[in-house]
Amino acid sequence: MGWALLGAGLLLALYTLLRHGLRRAPPPRAPPALRGRTAIVTGGSGGIGAATALELARGGARVVLAARSASRGEAAARRIRTETGNEEVRFMQLDLASLRSVRAFASTFLRQEPHLHLLINNAGVSAGGTTEDGFSLPFQVNHLGHFLLTQLLLERLQSCAPSRVVIVASRAHCAGRLRLDTLGRAPPGLLSTFQDYCDSKLANVLHARELATRLQGTQVTCYAVHPGFVNTELFRHMPLWLKPLFQLLAWLFFLDASEGAQTSLHCATHHGLECFSGRYFANCRPQEPWPAARDDRLAQALWEASERLVGLVGPGGSPSPAPATVLQ
Image (tube, rainbow, N blue to C red):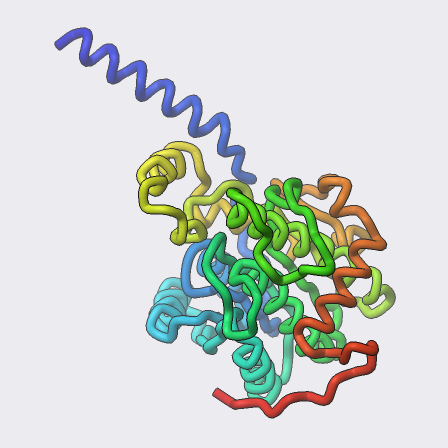
């Protein structure tokens, strides 16, 4: 019995050391004063998105939870209203895996909401199949859907400036390899799923970089953030045989959602970050991303390719006529 207790104590001590030594969560901050500000948080029904929306609402912002599931979205909005006492929290349906849904969401939002100051492009998936638009699910949800959403809302962000766009990327961008001739299609090979996710995260960092370049002088700034390794449902599509191991590692070492939201909140609300527009943040500090994520020519080429893929411009580079929008 004595050896068993000693072993249990050693395991507990090791767990505590590893958990608090590796997690390195930035300290929580006091809620910012955001009364009169309007924010959209994609993927706001759970995980980092819900934690981000909660703190924005706690600061007094009007918050729109943009998510695919109506039941989960409405439940999250109710929960945040109850916890914060802020009645200015609402759900609007958005499926980033459907460009039609992105256009419908933007049209509805612009018609119903006169202001937009914060756009938090948070939603993401790690794996999946092919979307109705013919793209790989991770690349469309993580990059193309958010790219289109940002473009459709950009005029409103500019009219309400100063405003900010926060794009939740990942340190996984360091393994990204963008092939512009096959952009939007899952790469071949045994590690196709992992590579596809990394490619989408590289696209996130490059999107923020190019967006900042194009928005100079507008008082709209943007930031790519690495939230840390967070225990959320992001990897719900991974193989069943791998889930038990991943869940154990996540429980031991990963941040919880509220900790993972801190860098997004920092970039959305902290004063004096305008000079860092387009930069990559981790642990609430600007950091140098992987060299490919600092390639301005690649960022511009990705932007132009993304415009074509989502139908904002035609093959020759001229603006495409807006398709009919189904209002939700």
